Image (cartoon, rainbow, N blue to C red; front, side, top):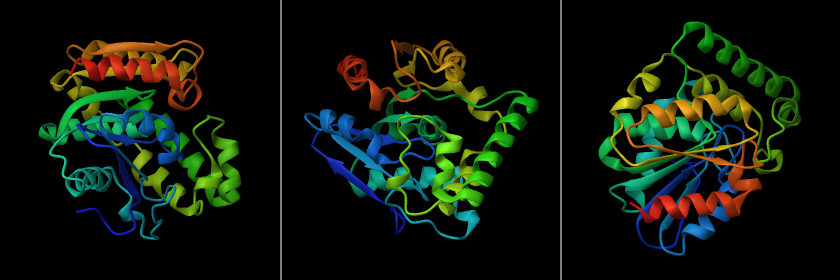
Length: 249
């Protein structure tokens, strides 16, 4: 069951594809992709808690990886999809990996877009969490205007969000890293996987190569000229890679 206050919608008919956006974005970043895939798939988009059209509850415990995965499964149940190809961008890619490890029967394939598998070292995780706290503090202090200070990426648009408080809670509750179980579980993923990264997205190039090496049979696609958001800035090249991947499933 999808919790009250979560925005989602599906377009088209056919095999299900669930698209999950990254932190501080929303389903709007997949508008062109959902329209393209809806020609022969059921393209499902949703907004994470605190983002876009979804609610921003005040209880910080509502924001967690586990609850996000429950929403993803609930959305699939709501549209009658027993499984789906998961397309996740940035944080959405990490959540897609989490779901593939937790509920592998619900996942028919993975498309991981400009994302990473977390950190093995405590120091790397600590630095990441220091960054997420800076994000949250900027949103607490400056409201939605703080988005411009923490992200210049093309998928981020302050106009799509209701308020900054939900984003700050999401940063502290979902974006934070707690351990390295996702990285350690990559070799156990047994579904077809496409890893996509923008050639100019330097912070995520190394992690993308690592995932493509560790996930059995995964393929890496580097989008020339793209930064952190190929679905937004380079949709034609991104859709070409998607179509080739989906065509082989």
